[in-house]
Length: 270
Image (cartoon, rainbow, N blue to C red; front, side):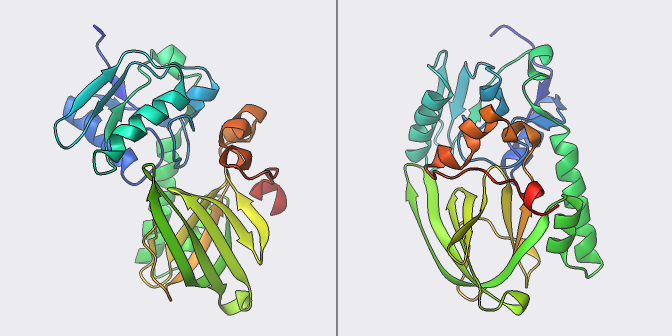
């Protein structure tokens, strides 16, 4: 592009993708920007505040572990970009490196969620300190993240498959302790998208559904469950940018085919 880049921004708050952004910035001697276009983890490229703020995604550079490299100088839109990059990921062991949305700071500033890295740092510190103090890290994360500990249960069933480059499946929990006799089901598409309590829709995107292994005190990512595993379900509120009409159009339950209205966790559990 004939431009000197000054910083790197992570594509989402995710254990791998955020770390990769830090690694890239460090290797290149660039700044890591305290913001991102998701404020949580998301499954697809169009699930970004870049898209809802009309920041162009192209040009896009991609590379895989085999050494294949490509640059898309122009794509129709973010949905098309997702289809192209996902197709390349499928033939690359479902893993591919992507760099997109080159932007000037003045344009980027208006199209991202500020302080996302600081938010992740705050959550991470509270989680670590709770573990070190012998406290319940799931409960602590819920408190610090202004969310709730929604359910505690044991993994009753789970199923998953890899479809078009996505990890898709269901996790079903049977309640324990104060949740004895209740059932909690979660459907995921890479991320946990929607949940049901005793057959009734409970939580949906853009709120964030997180699961912790109660024994190891570690987060559980999809699809790494085991039958009998005791877990806690924590729900954190969505960044405000996703709760707008445009945000919900792009990343609300209807965008995943569930014809229900978003009912914010913050509104339900004040």
